Length: 381
Image (cartoon, rainbow, N blue to C red; front, side, top):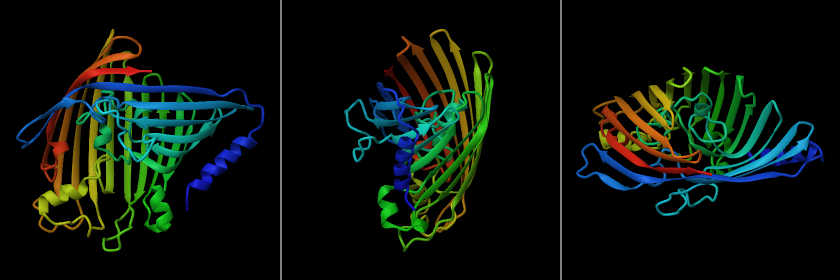
């Protein structure tokens, strides 16, 4: 099964919606963010200090292009493309793709929107259908190390061959779903049963004060190497929400995962297991990690200022082959403080710091054992 015919079908549906289309609306938008950062991993001889690159600013620098056209009878169609890049070098963060963050064709009406292309899963802060953003789950507003809940819950990140839908009501009940069947290369080279598949369903309620919802995820790991064991499917459940006190606001996330093959979006589980054993236990394992994560954050706007803090805890237990491993369980805690000052509607100063500390299984992982700080300027257009 491939997603490409679905994209073609979406295009045909646009034509079928009618010929009473008005002039298209097209806009260029983006974020330019830069600054300095400090990073010191536990046990490292020296800290790293430099100009912030991609994933080292609260909001990643990117350039977007979006077009939309009214098809008549309440229907519309459009496209959206985004490229992420590093201001320190001007290079795309993924040079193999021109539109590495987002590339989608969409069609919808006042009730529902359907998209196909390359998109992020719901459990991060990326457009177009982030449940974390919809429910204000991260009051720090930052994707920096030690600050973003997407770093410790289930997160697949950007995925090729994705089809998704979302209801469009601004307030009240919402429902959305997503499915992807792996990269362009794997879907043509391997069969359906050997490709990576991800599905997510989210539902909940958005109100003036209370926003609350649930997110279900399923992932079938790829099996493209016959010398390795076929891995069991991953299942996860997330409850998340926020409460606005009329200025100050608080949010919380609780995640429970079964047979996860990564923590957050980083594909570093093999390195985590290798540090503890010196043996490639990941390749021969059919069962993965059981993960429980909790995250709370607080935000307080005061005039042109915005103060926020976040605290997260992750508990992981490895159920696969454990030859040579000293620990099969591990915990990590992350804490952060973030400050923004709005110079204008478009320009913002930022400064923040985080601390992460891991134990046992997660003790040797740099991203769970480090101090990170960053400060700089963000401009939106």
